[in-house]
Image (tube, rainbow, N blue to C red; front, side, top):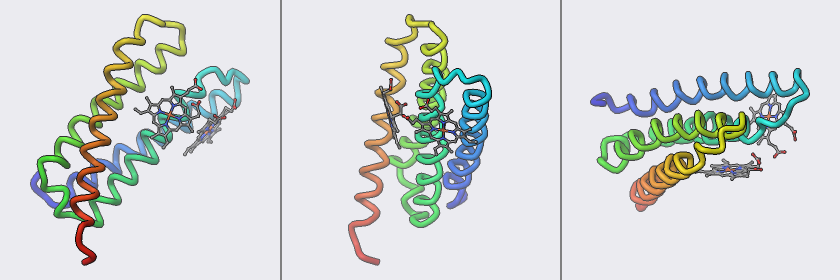
Length: 129
Ligand code: HEM
Ligand code: HEM
C-alpha cells in the first residue's frame, strides 16, 4: 500500500460490503421472523460497517498514520481475522458448536488489531496540529 489514501480506501470499500451483508441478514431475519442470527447481524454491522468506516475515516484524517507498521499490522490482522470471525459466528448460530475455540482465536486477533489501532490513534493525536 504505497498511496497515502490506499488503506483508507480499502477500509471504506470493505465497510460497505459488510453493510450490504449486515443489512441483507437483517432483512432476512425480519422477513423470516427468525431472529436467531442477530449476533452475527449486529457484529457484521458494528465490527464491519461501523468500525471499518471509522478506521477508513481516521486514516483519511491522519494519512501519515497509515504509513506506520502499526497501522499496517492493524489492517492485515483486522481484515482477515474479522472475516473469519463472522464466518465462524454464523456457523455457531447455525448449530456448529465445534467452531467455538477457533472463534475465540479469531476474536482475540480482532482484539489485538484493535489495540494496534488504539496505539496508532494515541500516537497520531499527541500534538494539537
Ligand atoms: C434494513 C436494515 C436492517 C434490518 C431489516 C435490521 C433488522 C434487525 C432485526 C430483525 C434484528 C433483531 C431484533 C431482535 O430480535 O431483537 C436486528 C437487531 C440488531 N440490529 Fe439490525 N437491521 C438493519 C440494519 C442494521 C444496521 C445498519 C445496524 C448497525 C449499524 C444494525 C444493528 C443491529 C443491532 C446492534 C441489533 C441487535 C440489537 C439487540 O441486541 O437487541 N441493524 N436488526
Ligand atoms: C472482538 C470483538 C467483540 C467480541 C468478541 C464481541 C462479543 C460479543 C458477545 C459475546 C455478545 C453477546 C451476544 C449474545 O447476546 O449472545 C456481544 C453483544 C453485543 N456486542 Fe459485541 N463483541 C465485540 C465487539 C463489539 C463492538 C466493536 C461493538 C460495537 C461497535 C459491539 C456491539 C455489541 C452489541 C450492540 C451487542 C448486543 C447485540 C448482540 O447481542 O449481538 N461488539 N458482543
